[in-house]
Length: 230
Image (cartoon, rainbow, N blue to C red; front, side):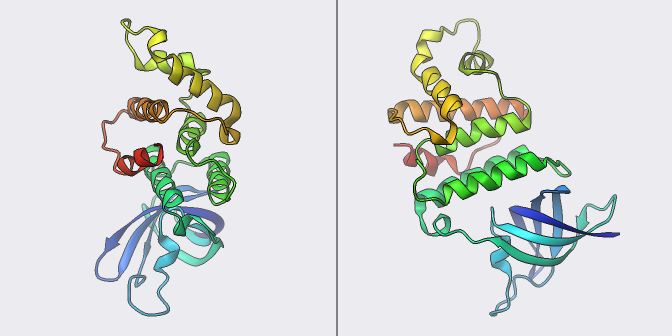
């Protein structure tokens, strides 16, 4: 068993017994790992439960034993304190959606330090007061699909994957133009786009992810997200 120093991003946790949790953390160096943390849900000022909320960024020293599905954390510190995400409904809702996307997209043992760095960068932007929030979830989905290995080259390729032979490109020209804009500008996009096109493109992205992840799961955070895209 080795002790490893790494950065980590909390994906989710499950309650375990009376006061413990099993937490899934996307670590920069070891990939997605599960850790059991004892006594963390006990009441009192020394509780460290705040460390294990989704998308919290941590500095960690963890035990790592090959072939073990559950490891333990030796030391944990907060790596980044958000200024706006926990206190702003729009930002916290987008963060919740990001967490759900990651929870559905990455699997135990998946390691990609470049993807980790991109997520950390995205959260830094989301916490910045100047970011344009209405485009943010869609840009995150597009950019993440590159790291996950299924991003097409352009908007036409994206829509061709989702449609059959009866599809006519003119039917979705506005959404295609919007996606091309996001591909070009990424998080720097500030152009105004009608809410209908933003919502339609979100629906297309959810279909796109479900297809590539080979699952028809329910997206729990999307209902609130659609309200933000209005």
